Length: 335
Image (tube, rainbow, N blue to C red; front, side, top):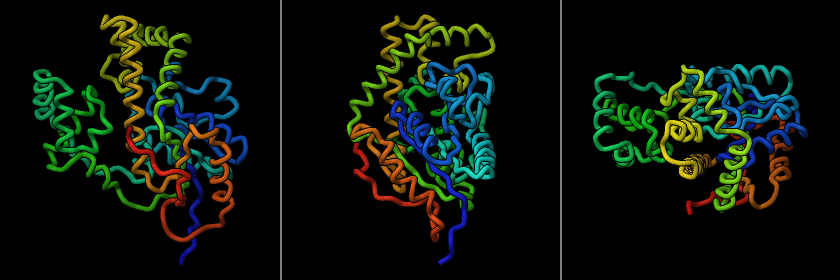
């Protein structure tokens, strides 16, 4: 058997509000790690309160690569993330530290480790027809159509996420194959790092749902709506941009457009965040080579450190892309 001489990296994954950032910082206090954010909202400057971005004091003590790297008027793709993340990981490794990638954007993790598959280019005619259909029957009905043809993609795309729904249906029409199948194909090659995956996954989602509501109320108290107002005043942002479609920001934008009252806005934002967490958990349950840590059992630092310490002390092993661990608990089932 050949010795696996690849440098080491750690993926710390979990749904929103599961405590990933706090755990990453605690691990960085104990081990020679360099932090890298894997979050599609944190890349944008000005999305601070509503994106639960680490505060200035936290970032001063524990800098995270790939936070605040893009203006919200400029969309940021998974392909760009992959290029940026690989460069950041090389820099961290060159400094003699181990990259710790922390976040909840499954598409970014997948694109990074497995590469990006070749998808058909956009077809304006197909997109226009799908948009016309959606205008007649609504995006939730289009989502139901996608669920029949590509259940895996539908599970991670929101019922009103027009852009992603349109793209998923477009890919099916143009290629005859589900988007999720094409994305699994990747672009080949062995990932240049040997990876330990840690997944914060609660067996009981009720405490997570409580934290989501409490955190959103804290965001409101901290001035989240004023943050959205500032973004709107720029004049160059609109509701179809990926930054503004981020959970919470979309609902805040709609509320400031006059859609519903304050209570309705709060309910819709919390519901959207819970749906995001559900999609993230669905994706994470498929990461069978991850060590599962239930954040509700006890603070997970000790259990995470138990996994990290021998991994960092390893001198190498043969074969495979990830160090495989037996979960401390079975992967949680849907309630």
